[in-house]
Length: 156
Image (cartoon, rainbow, N blue to C red; front, side, top):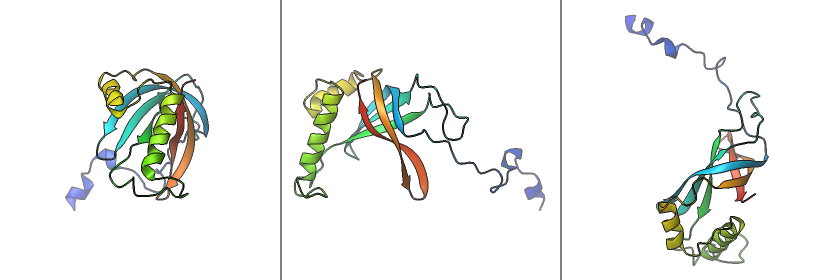
């Protein structure tokens, strides 16, 4: 009994009264800076981390600044078996769809690399860090949780 009375003061809260939904960035186009790009071999993607800057405004909680928020954008890469599996529309293989998507992204970003090894070298050399970009942000619900997602990324 004495152990329950000597708990940490940081644990003094009420789950009903103190629960607060995190603020969301309203859907729209925002300015951001690329702060990280990594190759995730396990997930077979490039992950771009961007930090919102020079937008002003606040999130849906009316207190969290939009600027300073970080979000991720992923370029999905072909993986074994994608050459045999069709997209949901049935118009092309998943491999072709992922290649097409990456090609369109590189064009919108005005990046010169044309092969995965060239992109990996640019990532290793931190060539993409500091790029100023615009991103389209939307919201998505997954497992009863609403969160922001980057729907598109391109040069302003």
